[in-house]
Amino acid sequence: MSDSAKNQKTQFYDYHVAAGGKMVPFAGYLMPVQYPAGIMQEHLHTRNNAGLFDVSHMGQVLVTGVGVASALEKLMPVDLDALAINQQTYATFTLPNGGILDDLIVTRWAEDTYFLVVNAACKDQDIEHLKSYLSDFTITHLDQHSLIALQGAKAKDIMLKLAPSTSDLIFMHGCSVQIDGIECYVTRSGYTGEDGFEISVSNDHALAVADRLLAFDDCKWIGLGARDSLRLEAGLCLYGHDMDQNTSPIEAGITWSISHSRRAGGAKEGGFLGAEKILKHLADGAPKKRVGFLVEGRAPVREGAEIADNDGNIVGVITSGGFGPTLQAPVAMGYVTSALAAVGTQLNAIVRGKLRPMTVTKMPLVPQRYHRGK
Amino acid sequence: MTQKFYTKDHEWLSIEENIVTIGVTDFAQEQLGDVVFIELPEVGADLIEGDEAAVIESVKAAGEIAVPINGTVVAINEDLVDQPELLNTAPEDEGWIFRVSPSDGLETASFMDAEQYQKYIDSGE
Image (tube, rainbow over all chains, first blue to last red; front, side):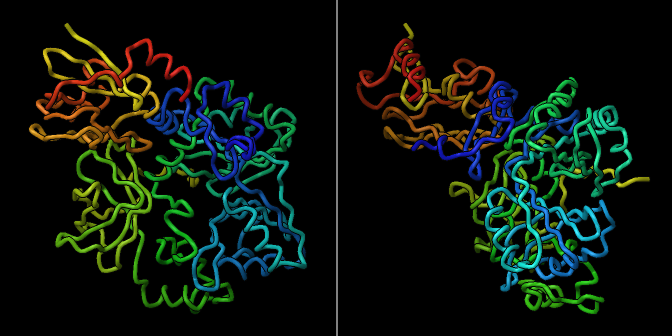
C-alpha cells in the first residue's frame, strides 16, 4: 500500500489540491505543507492579512457528565470549575512521572460539558486515556466535525462580516454562532501569535463555511510549514518536539498553564497525575528548561542540533528551529541545564560541525497580538 | 563553447574552458522553497565526486549539494551570502553556487543533457 493510501483526507483535501497545495503525510492525514506562494509569503500573509488553516486532523472531543470538571482535573493541573461557560484554557494531560501526554485547549461548553481540542498524532491515545480514567462519563469523539483557523491582522474584519457577534469575543473565549445559517462553534484563539479564530463545524457544512471565508480577497489557505514558523516566532510549544512524556510542564516553560489553585497552598492543591514531581519542580526548580534562542547570522538551527557552552561542553539540545520570516532571522528553542537558562546567556548550536553563536532570549520573539479586550 | 549538463540530483554543470560552474536546477529550487542561507565551500578545497560541497537551507529544510566531479574549488558565488534568494529567482544564472577546476579528464557520459533531464523530471523519479 502506498503512503497516500494509508492516510486520511480532511473535507478540504480537494480544496488544498485545487489551490496548489503540496500534500504530505502528517499524523495520519494528507495535509498541505505549503501552497505555490511558499512558506515565507504564507507566513507574512497571515501576519499582515488573514490566513486560513485546515486543522481538521486535530482531535475534537466532548466530555460530559455531572461532576466532570473534578474528574478531568485529575488529568490536568488546571481549575476547570473556574472557567466560565464559553471560556477556554490551555492545559496539559500530565503523566504519573510528571511528564506530558499531550497539550490541549479545553473549553467549557456547559455546566458539565467540556470541549477538548487535542493534537492529531495524540488523539487516539488521548481518547483511550480519557476513557480509562473517566469511565463514568460520556466521551464523544467529534470525528464528523472539521476545524479551521482564521488567523491574522484582518481575521476580525472578516468575522465581523460573517458572524458579527464573534468580533466581541476576547482571547480564549468562544460562542455558538450561525454563519449563513450553519451552526458553528467559534473561539478567539489560535497557534500563530496573531489575533484569530477557530471554527468547529460539522463536515457536511465545512466547505460552505470555507467558501464564505475564501471569498474575501484577504483570506488565503496557509500550510503546515508557515503554521510552524508562525508558532515558533510566537514562542509556542509543539508537542512531541518541545515537550514530551519525559518533560514536566515546569521544564517545558509552561508553568503559567498550571492554575494557582492547583499549586502548593492552593484550594485544590495537587490531585493530578504527576503532582508530586511537578509541584516539586515548581518549588525547587527543574534540572533543565526550555528557552528560546536568537541565532547570529542567517543559518537556521534545527531540531536535534546540540547546544554547547563557550568551552565546548554539551549543555542541551535544540527541539524546534528554523527561519523566522517576520524576524528575517533564524529562531530556535531548546532545552538547557537550568543554570544556563537566563535571558542573555551566550551559547552555541553545533550545526554540521560548526559553532553557531546564539543568545537565550525572551519569548515570544514576535509580539503576540491577541485580542484581550480593552 | 559552453556545454551544459544535468545530474539526477538536480544539479546543473556548465562547462566553459575547462572550468565547471555548478548550481541547482529550477526544479530543485522549487522543491526546496524559499532559500534563506547557503553554506558555500572554501576556495581551494579539493573535492572528490560525492563530497558535500554546499548546503542550501530553505525555510523548510536543509539540502546538501554533492559535488558531481573530482576537482578543486576555484570560485564561489559571494552574492549568495547576502542574497540567498538568488537561488530561487535565478537558479541557473545569477544563482550559481561554485566553480570547480576538474582534477582529471572530465567524464560527462553519466550526465544528462537538457532534453534528457526534462524527461527525467517529467517521469517523476
